[in-house]
Amino acid sequence: MNEIVRAIHQRRRYRRPGVLRVVIVAESFVPAVNGVTNSVLRIAEQLTSHGHECIVVAPGPGPTVVDGVSVLRVRSFDLPRYGDLRVGLPTARLAAMFKRIQPDVVHLAAPAVLGASGALAARRVGVPSVAVYQTDLAGFARRQRLGVAHRPLWKWISWVHQRADLTLAPSTSAVWALRHHGVHNVALWARGVDLRRFHPLHRSDEWRRTLAPAGETIVGFVGRLAPEKQIGRLAATSARPDVRVVVVGDGPERDRLEAVMPRATFLGLRHGTELGALYASFDVFAHAGLDETFCQAVQEALASGLPVVAPASGGPLDLVRHGENGYLWNPADPASFSEAISELVGHPALRRRLGAA
Image (cartoon, rainbow, N blue to C red):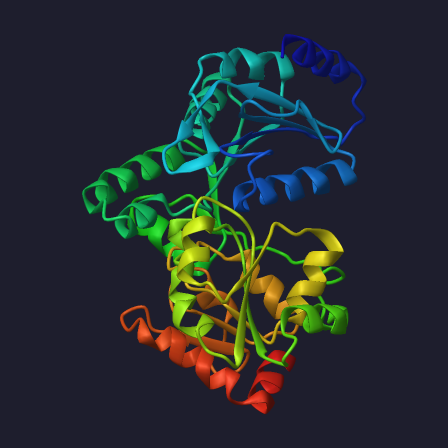
């Protein structure tokens, strides 16, 4: 790590005017695959493509260079029940690191533990920081029957974000939640979507023959197979003989879900053009998790021309227009999830109309 910091420090003298140096303190990063990792990858990609310098600080172990961007690793521990996720330990070394790197801004990606020490270090050395809120930790705790942790978690989240100069939230509901809990330096920063990768033109007859050989309606889900996604709600739909449920992604819940939904097709992780073709080859996209601060998968499905069934809570409220491009199901009535899917499965013309919107 010291060699990387020295090399970055040396380059400081040769920077062109107008070039920013941004340190991203990421609560999660490669090799973990999740929404935080993906957003950090896109931010780093956009910064470097515009000529700026980018350095990522993330939990170890892992590669020290990702897509040409230097990654400084810190010690970490496994998160219980999430074997592929690691939590970076807070470290007092961040302040010294920032002094040597001399960033123009510190970007805190979903700050919780490592990000909290990043916020304090940035303030200590006088570097402006931007915190990005994108993980509803308090909501996850409540869904996992850890309601006693809900209030303390919000106090911690609020305290961390108040240490930053600006907080960016991806959806209207996230902005409101933060303000309700005392974070007032918050602004809306929604997500974009790659319209070349996710497009109806990528619909694949080959994939459809493979996934639904008898011409079944394909109901798809894409995302991390973790408890908070509540993918098991698709069990009733997966039992229908006229439907093929297709699950794209991986995670700690995969074995349990395969047992609960034996007729569903689990494809594991897919990327790039293959992922775009899978989205476009579905007939309906269904999302069951209630704690999404944005839900990039819903936006990718909409861009692929799919009607979406998503909960009337969190990020999907900004994305799904009920009855126009999909259905919002009622979290207080879990049966409404399967009922909304059934409505679309039974009416191909309705699917086409909502998908076109």
